[in-house]
Image (cartoon, rainbow, N blue to C red; front, side, top):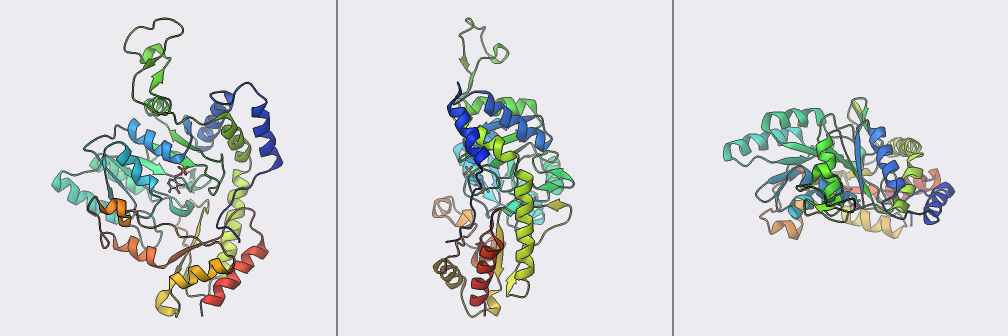
Length: 385
Ligand SMILES: *Cc1c(COP(=O)(O)O)cnc(C)c1O
């Protein structure tokens, strides 16, 4: 089976992890700090907080931005559930903004319209979480302008988008957001097995995220509410979690980072090859918006069902049977039974639901061979007659 995505692990990556196993620190040592600095400097921001997953990064970002009971967090319905769950962890409620029919990212027009209504009803969001779907940045400048007008903060879910750029700067630059989070799960652009990093240009937010990631405990006397008892003293100042990244993961991340740009280039080359090979099929191919480059995490094709005799389900199932590991990103979060219990129902976000009815993610990863890609294209074309 050709997988829809997979990691690329080199001998250097393996050696980096083995070296940590022979070192003094398996956790809370020098590698995590180095990895945080590496990610932050790549993005052009001052602070990076490494944690054990992007899900944890979303959670500590929400906590650091003060999300709590009675607050509202808005995100896109076309995302992994973690982009919404982070709000529920904090006792806040979640709402969604429909997607743009072309980019499949959060629609700025839908966001503006929803904000106007929310202002009338007194239900404005505290935080908005735009998701850079497939590795292509949302319209951050416009979303940021709305944040100033309506007074919300922004967490970019860039789980798909390390190595991408927006208006000439790397995604994660935080010019138009408060925090940006990345995932290093094995299917993403680079991996630490499990892992994530939250970057920010705001010192106070970084400090809070660091506290929440490690039990809410500090050894810094300036953060304590009482004078220190001595050099051994630590104080719990918040209810935090153990979300720390290990040294093994950070060493793998540092080693992977040296190939980030090569991975993104390979993915772009393969994606453009798909563009050329699939251009005459009954498919809507991914569109690249201006002023941004994509990390090409996913290659999503939309079936023109009205031109086809087969259903999406048939195409999906038959591709899997032929050894093509297709996938579907994503089931709209508001249609999940868990979310329907909050009062959401089918029909609430029509563009998202329309997207869900007709898309398939076809295999794309840095080391994919042209032979495998030709095989995927041939099998797909066989079904699209
Ligand atoms: C993968 C992913 C996450 C969660 O990442 P983990 O590191 O697995 O916790 C969150 N949001 C999006 C959009 C993702 O694709």
